[in-house]
Length: 553
Image (cartoon, rainbow, N blue to C red; front, side, top):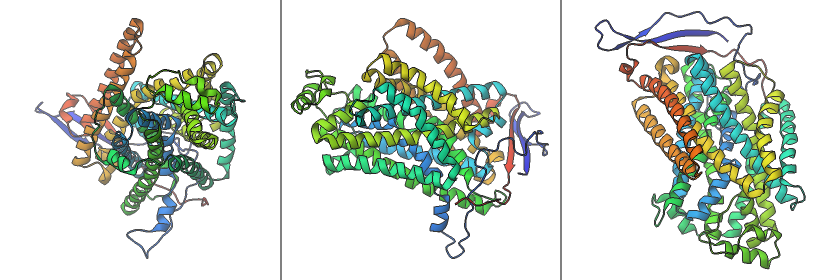
């Protein structure tokens, strides 16, 4: 792939009053042992058909571009999101559906930025970070995103293990389900060799399973449609307190996943786009955005199914209510619910049990199938994210087999220990901690993607305009503030002085690094006086595509 590199420098001008922008002459790319040191494992790219009869919109072209957005949307349907949905319904009824809608729209806009970065530059977000940030910040970023990926992997392991336990009527213990998730991951890896299109079709099938299973629960429960629409389009939460506010924050933290930005910016590279032609780049941006809209609309509907089921059937229910119903139907899991009048608390395990108690065993098993599909689909996208991040930040070539062994081992070890020595409530309780972990990592995806998509030397004519810069900056500040609130709520609930001290030290280091990234971002957004006389270099790298060697069916 031919490359051209340019440098953008902010330097203090001769008068000493400001910062001037200087474009230097092209510089020679660094030598590499390979033809393309950042080649991902998409060795073949899907060609885009010509359709001169439909210049404005072509379904043939949309179909060719369809795939990356649906893989990206799986992060909106992982077990962590499903648990957040059911808790939202049980705690606040339909009142927080508008928060789910708003979070999904915000997620779509941020995914648009990530996809545009990959389409325009031919590099995904981790690769751009590798080129633009100094070594130490780059390594810190890599560690933070790896933590997010491992945390996501743990949620997938937990969800799959619980689903297997429910489907086997408890005959396979939770620790057994955790071990099974090791084998199923490698099964997915073998499927990858049959071609990218077939793999994308598999993910589409898993999303269909989730739509059918959770849709079945929705039809069975028959939620109040009037209350549903009111909760979705009226941004108000009547009678809500701290519990509902915390749940609203949890929805945002669960929906917007940091590693998903890195994933989406890489997946769009699987299509053949001639980046030397502005028309083709613009067309790719358009179709990828349309596909992302469709994919996230479907994921939103599935999430609405889950929220609505628990809002209609279990909002304002007490443990006593559920205990009596389960005991009357001879459900052994009735012991999960204490016979008192405290408000019902649910998770993905209890959620399945409650559905079985109220609506019959079929509802329980169908729920478990949906959770299993959510966990399994997220497994492979997590593997892809890890591969892209490691290759991009470190230029380290690992086989997918080795990559899965590493991340899955790290994810399974603590999960397996909890499954063996604790009960299911401790296992599902790990999801709360993992959602906090995800929240902490959000700035390390949102700030870089806004920074680089706002730089004209990086994005050329496709750089963010003033409106996008302002809106993006405000969104990132709001999202990071919301998620920091979520973290504070979680830490204060720990109730131990030692943990407070440790959290304070970590917070200072964390905020210092976020401030550094924000400083770089503000310069990119058009506030160059913050450079304070220092030189801030931005390298422009353009990758142009060679003709495809083979088509992928």
